[in-house]
Amino acid sequence: MNDIPEQQLVKSARSGDADAFETLVRRYEKRVYALTLRMCGNSADAQEAAQEAFLSAWQSLPFFRGEASFATWLYRLASNASVDLLRREKRQKAVSLDDAELTLDIPDSRLTPHEEAERNELRDAIRTGLKSLPDDYRAVLVLRELHQLSYQEISDTLDVDVGTVKSRINRGRKRLCEFLTRTGNFSPAAPSKKTEKEGQ
Image (tube, rainbow, N blue to C red; front, side, top):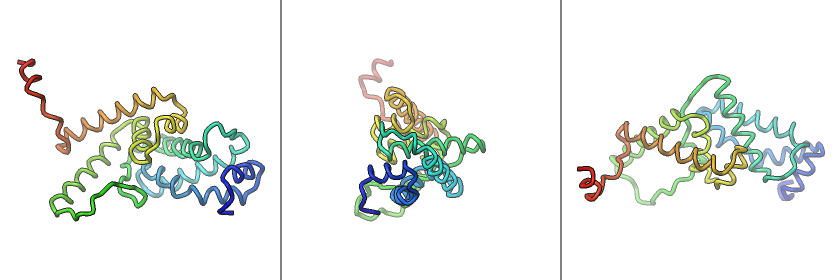
């Protein structure tokens, strides 16, 4: 069933075809787990959230009308499951930025030990900084920066308007930069000479 178009699989699954739904699960399980892992911060919670998302998908499929893509709809369920789990257990755990699914544009040249240490320190700081953000800000940053979703896709995924998405991303980035500046992992741009004179 791997070569069957997604629309056909969704249609069959909506009609109660468990095999069709299993094929959809296999297609998306890695991406859904990558999202829940970054949201929850550990594999046990991530697996639980992913399972809840797929269970919710199976139960809600008869009501899925296709206004958004199946992937976007599934991301929404996974994001909601992750946030619900974190709130239910009142945990704020680190978001994993270094799992195997994460794609980074890394130059081919090998890093020096000093550069590698600096990079690891920055990664740890970003992980801690994301942990400190409110759930709403963390969710949009994970979807935007790590999953490369567009503003509209994030809007569809989280069921909020695009303006809210942009606002949360801007505020989340600002808070994260402030955290990195406080911890010495980010240096704000030096003021221009014109700005310095105006401030005198």
